[in-house]
Picture 1 (cartoon, helix red, strand yellow):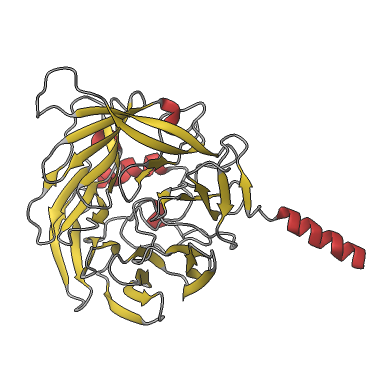
Picture 2: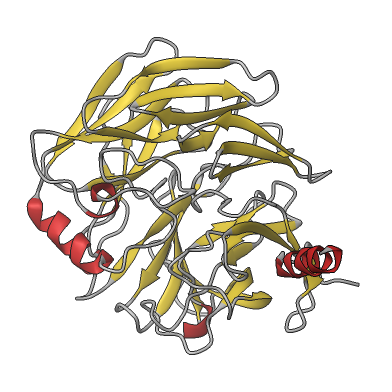
Length: 414
């Protein structure tokens, strides 16, 4: 009996994913940050780090936890089935939804406050820079809910909002996502985009449309500037927009210049001066990471190879490095060797031609492979992000079966 128990314990120990290893294909150190099967870091454009930059916020099947980046010790902060919105950039708070109501919790003291109930069929996506406003959308009337919102969340996933928000959805992508996107776009459901005052609970609808409004994301520095998208199949929508929190200054960020040109998965630089986004001219053929400067309107485009295209990109706090999560052959790039976590160094090309300030600046991304993701199932998107000190790239993966949070060191192991 003792021998059986010993062998059982040994087998269980062997089944646990390793805590750290050097990737033999890249020479970079990888660490497993979380111990809970089903734990996950946030969607790529959500803020997953506390205001002091010392802790990573992540979800578990039991709720929301934080990980000390220095000691790697973890601690539960919120228990129960909730949907995490963001970590605050000013206060040591996390913002989340529980059963149709928005809350915040201080990660140090544990103090918790109810903010307000959400509008009917409403969801929240983002918190602004000074933590005075949340923003979200709701569906008006009785139109059908589509996609992830029409099915229960997977075990361990944050709770669904009622409106079709991409952030906070079940971790695995639905197999019928393309069909769902087409049907939802064609439905033209009336929607409202609203702000929610964190102090008073006041709800203000600042924009209405029958476009599918999604991916709301406040500027990390300007509390009155909000980015949002017209969701749907990317080749059929003008996706990226900004507006002010009073509903004014609605601006389209990118204009298509050819059939089947697609652009999306937009995100802010940490200083709020630049919008970055995936651009393909046309879809699945030529790949760029594009930028738009909010103040000047200047544009840059960094070219990358098919294998280096990533589902999501992200940028370091100083803007000097980028990362990507690659993709399997079933993704839009159909990359034969794209299953890697990548590090990119942006390089602008020297101008040796006509110097016209209206021209966009061309560049390239110099890629370095960080983690071999050949054992990762890409229905779970890795969603990479840099730690605030830009020494590690954090991502989620199912390479060992259950989902865990991992990090890879930017510098090669010595």
